Amino acid sequence: MREPSGTYREVQLSRPADVFQYLRRELEYADQEHFLSIPVNTKNAVIGVHTVNIGTINQTVVTPRDIFKTAILSGATGIILAHNHPSGDPKPSPDDKNTTRLMADAGKILGINVIDHIIVGRDRYFSFKEQGLI
Image (cartoon, rainbow, N blue to C red; front, side, top):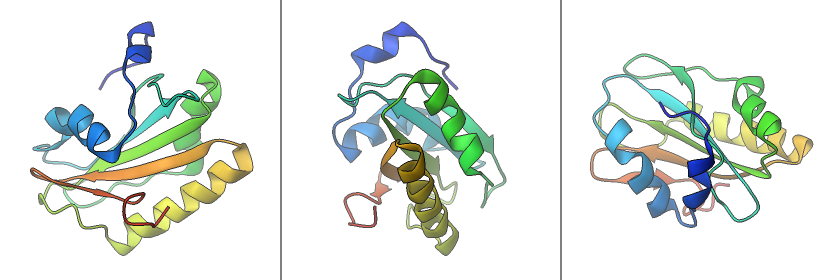
């Protein structure tokens, strides 16, 4: 996965569909779950894209420390979470919902807004923001 560089600042992710298009090529057909964090600045310009964990065909484990480490070090004001579902169905599991709530709560404590959590499926995505769950 990509690492931070100055070229990211040219990419602005304003809508969930933008995030899906930005990540789709790398995640849509992956055969394992990949959990990514995308720290952004105040204008939602990408600071970096970080692979937090690569799991199995149906799960990956992440902690707030893993998620927010690069956001803190890069001076991000917000973060977008993303992972894929190898099954192709982006419907969130109960664990996905719990993880999102945990990360949103941790972000509030740290002063880093969790802007969205996108689940990438085949030709479609699920956005916690669009569904009013974040």
